[in-house]
Image (cartoon, rainbow, N blue to C red):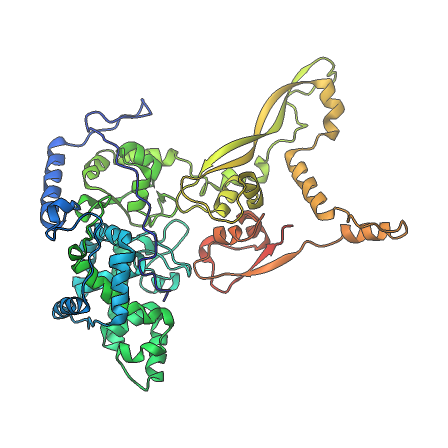
Length: 561
């Protein structure tokens, strides 16, 4: 299904701390907008309920409270194979999984408990947000609760994790497999990153694999490499149906998949013995709640009304790719901090109203692609027409170059930023001295744009120079002509020069065909080709739709440079 993730996938970046807001004094940068406070008594009840859950079901990250083993802060305990083997037998007695202990499993235990302790502590913290959700779904489908540890092997509990093969989310679904199990993927939303829906889909898939093979370890191997590869391994082993016997015939990454799962079971259950304690999670399961929405929700508008950082909203709702929920007659829900649910309900209509006023350049097509009738006026157009222009001042529309700074948001690529500002990817790289294509959230990029201005000029002078003044569109067309028809620097004889010039002038642009890969979007494809924008791709491929790219589809690309 996808390559083994282990714990090497990075966890989502920590979000900004919550804004400290009092319900009776909610700050507003828009003084004319009134935000209604939540009911203080009901809010107090919510907080008391959350505190009760936290006391019963969550554990502290304070080593002074939990360290019953007397370790120093930086101590890394090690144990003999005999001790670990005995602990594994105790775990094995509690589960239908065959939790065996051998050298391969020991290697992964060392990885998680010694070499990658930082990741293990983060996973311990994040488990407080996701494990209660996993356990409810696993119980519903009658799947062993230990399967919750599979998400650690897959994504390190990073809800926005994406593998190099294009698998995404906590359970690392490929687009095709996700759709088979009810996960919708479109331009606005990717339900592979929805914690609730992807967990339900993972349970259905795992149950189906178990029903096929009748063995949980083989089901795990099939989850990683696909049931076809497991069937091939069974055939090549002479019909054996034990993971350890067919292991040599499985793909290399799958050979380590089940041992990694066993090791994670051990480390999560004996974390304190190895002096591993949870890093503080941004939120626990009991500190968030979901609510259905009845209109469009833009995360910037929601942040303004609720006083919750946009990044935190996006992390809790990473299924929405453009940081907004569309009003498309489908059922959508928001995950919010529990103490903000009441505030949202009190100001629900205000959220929808403010969301409609927000402009998202990624979805506002007219912003970057005006209709022909709305193209910028030619620079020679004037607001005054006079028979005698001498000495008169007239208004003239001109375009001036301007620089602006773009702050990279999570999920953006150079290709998407190129399309947003309608500039070439090659220019963005040149302006910002970027060699590859990697950018990170929060990075500042310089973008050169054209700004329309109205100035006063002498009518007579304008009349004399109008025919020689090109519009921005003409400038662009002329630049393209120069680039496409530039004469060769090689010296030719006078007799052959006209022939060479004609040959160069008539030379057709060069193109290539790109084959769509799993998980590709038009943004990804544009980012892989310097100087190419999404709009250029669409123009060359009539009828192409962003949300209907098919793996193996051929897309025509103009070669730039």
